[in-house]
Length: 94
View 1 (cartoon, one colour):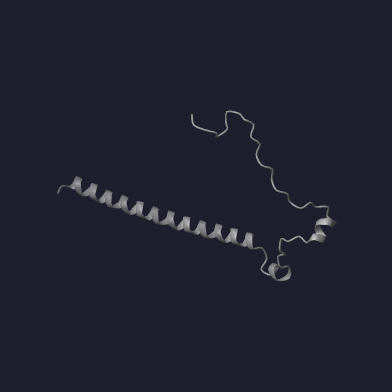
View 2 (view 1 turned 30 degrees about the vertical axis):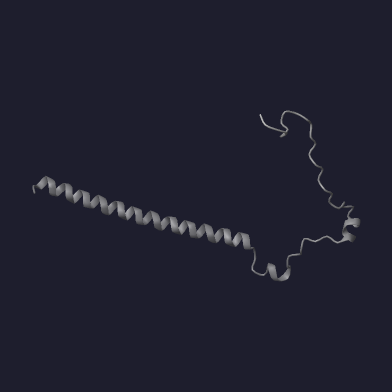
């Protein structure tokens, strides 16, 4: 093996070490970023720790007195689609 080949092998090993080091730092930075974002979103979504104890969530129910008081109407059944007799009707083959 001559001097030129040894230099190329040494340069290749150094390049592999550099790429490996950069990859490790990149993965570490991505993990830290994901952890910080996860903590930030978790804290923002949860709110203060004692908020749930003082104001428990109310169920989404409406009594009949509330319907009359707030002038709300009870839900009605949706109307059936009208058959217009157009070319879109599914009344047979082609």
